[in-house]
Image 1 (spheres, helix red, strand yellow):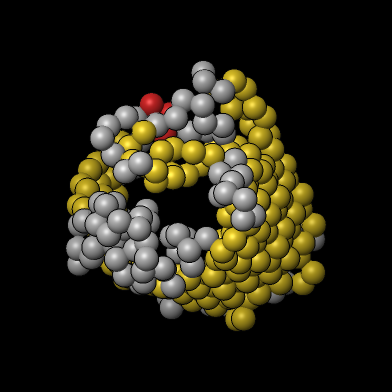
Image 2 (tube, rainbow, N blue to C red; image 1 turned 60 degrees about the vertical axis):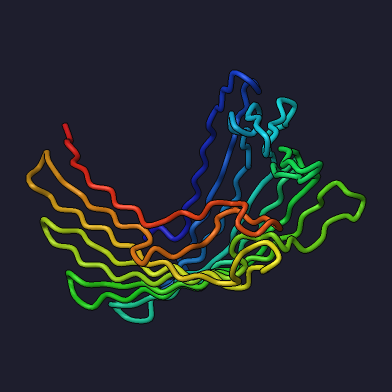
Length: 257
């Protein structure tokens, strides 16, 4: 039995605006016994600005063609433990360090795309998985993220009250057989600053239905935000300034060849 596994990859990112960049990552899995897996990962961060960040310009938003890519690293360390043949728990701690994080600064009645100095994220995730039968299973997860950002304003790294999801909760129920693969998901977030968001928490219900017609054809129905909850994915101290995604229904077919 192999107890230790090491993997590593490197990808080349070629961008017409920012040139080429190699991005590498590595992972380690160690299995001390049949029920326990200890794992770790470390990867580079390299994210270029979007075209809107660079060039968008209207009465409310000003892009910045001099933006720099985000660079940095993220790492995690965790353990998966099998409680019994049908359930397991997974705990991992993570950290992320980003130089030149992309953001928006509000000045002169306009949002300006900028690079902040630095951003650090750290936190943990606790997940429980349960198999009820060959067709039914569920998972429950809680994630806590603490964000500190240096906004290049002379105050150094400070708690980022504009954090999107300080505490998040995910509950998933799934059904699957030879032709169906369906799940219902409840996503919740709490702890958001009401100076930047219309509410400190929200609850979103999603569903995905997938039906395999034959070996080549399949069809799907995706329902996002079924209850049409109003919530922002970007914070702003101007209430209602950022649009909230509404209920979304996607239907389609896929062909595999």
